Length: 289
Image (cartoon, rainbow, N blue to C red; front, top):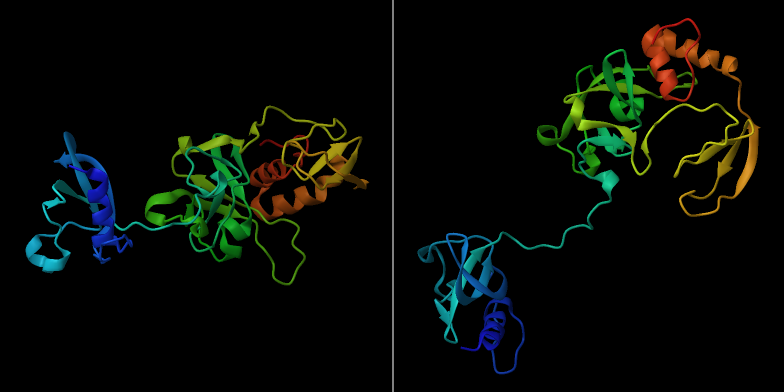
């Protein structure tokens, strides 16, 4: 019993592979052939066989005579295995485009009617936890309704409402079409608290706070704070030496009040301060969070 020769014959007869002395033919149901142990009720036996992979098993009465798989080929028993249709799919997506649970900041997310955006951060107000991202990501530029499904991954990255809903829209800062908008933000309430993680993808958990001028940097970020000035980075700090150029000095804490006032007017004091902290600002003294 020559398994290798039998496989060559099988490839010529079912897959159209040219081989000397054989007439190539195609069987539309056959996806591939191989050599393996015969399966009985999905359990491998010790008997060696030619495995013929088909898109779907059908009773022989529903097959044309030329499409039926014989019990033996060149004296070797055959084993018909249903596999579905083989196809070359797209390259396996990077982690930030996949479904991740628990989901950290940095992965694909989006309102069910938009393409996809980025999970910005996990924020909290008292005992409530929210996903923070942009209005155009979570609230569809103001067209969404409170309670709308938020997908992870986003729709563009394969997210589906029936399978990948991770949160529901809670609130957003209104975008004005005829005005200069200084904030593009929205929050969503996780469906299951344990399905979101208080950390940044490839960076980890935020372990504290730092003042401008401390020289604290984070891998992958596009800016750093050094000596009270912002420096724009053209490279990734995880292994590439950045090329920097000085930018204007960062505003002092009290100079961030206009943004704080805008957020408070849009969402109310508590939610405004929560979003302000998430965007890198600080709440005004004497106000609760």
